[in-house]
Image (cartoon, rainbow, N blue to C red; front, side, top):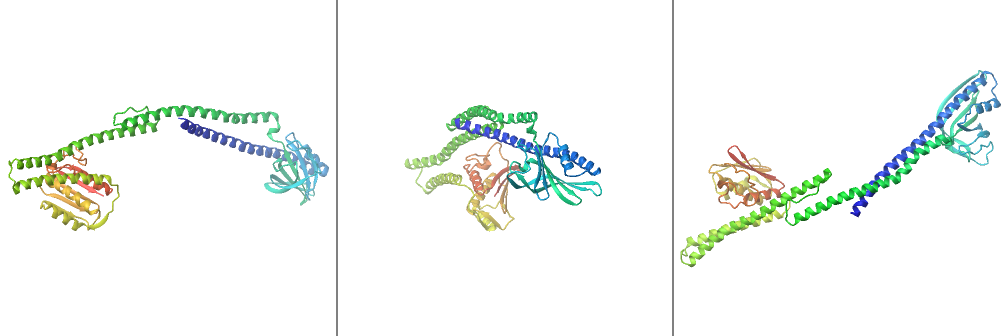
Length: 466
């Protein structure tokens, strides 16, 4: 039970952790996207205010460096953390405000590093001769010299200033993040907290589920084990534990089917033993009586008496040979070595051995593929049964992968002719031992085929196919 509990616990825990990790990953990816979207929206609003101030300066012909710096400061709100102004040669000429981390920006930073930054960019073309402002919005990646305090993600957007067709400078706009504000930070942290607490709660839930299910499953497993032990001792109609799931019901149904099969096999073995005893005892008794009669001089020691003893001996030897053949075939596994042989020669050989003129033969193929010896035994056994069952002609049809035997007659009900020592009506089994059709069935099994016997109107038809 301990191994089962550990397996279930780790299974539930893995699923719980996987779900939690996916949720945490989605949360942080969404948080990063929303943070970027928030920064870009703040930059867009800053751009609108800044553009209006530039248009006013151009219209009043008061645009200069001081008014530009004043417009940058006037357009800021509490969401803009800082602004960095670079000249056309990438020299920082002005920096005011702070980074997201609260570090004051310096116009003359001690350490500068050129980094590739992907930002929302506006190219602002100012024409002072004909007062106008034209803008082009793009998202582009560019190399920007930054101080060590500024990270690439701190820059929300960049303005490229062009005056009368000449680039005069660049303006990098820095914004705060939603976490900068206490109320927003509190809300976001409150959203993250359930994910943190979900991990131990998920493990506890997995522990409880693993314990409950493993205990219920163990009870079911113990019940199944007990039922199988009873079956192994030869008992039947064993009691099975109650199934809680469809899978367990399938197992129970399989064990019930196994129970019926084992009971059927036990009854069959008993019937086999009785039939073997009867079939072997009859010729043995006859031979014993004849020999005692000869000893007591009741029967003369004549060729006729010896012929009767030999006949009973031959019958006993034949039945022993059938049992041995059936046991041999039953112990083999398919497939067997199958080779092609001539169908007409095969049929001619069988007809010569049966020595009957009541067989109507139809051969629809030139070649058969299979074990010639075994197929010959099957054909002889089925022809013998059909000839004994009726005094009328027997039809034998040979195709490339099947043979059909038809005779007049009626099949008895509820008899499995392919079960050893089963006998049908007198016409079908008077001279047989009940082993012919079971041997035929085993031959077809080794050929990966089938044998079927059925009633069709007034005819009994047996078909073997492989």
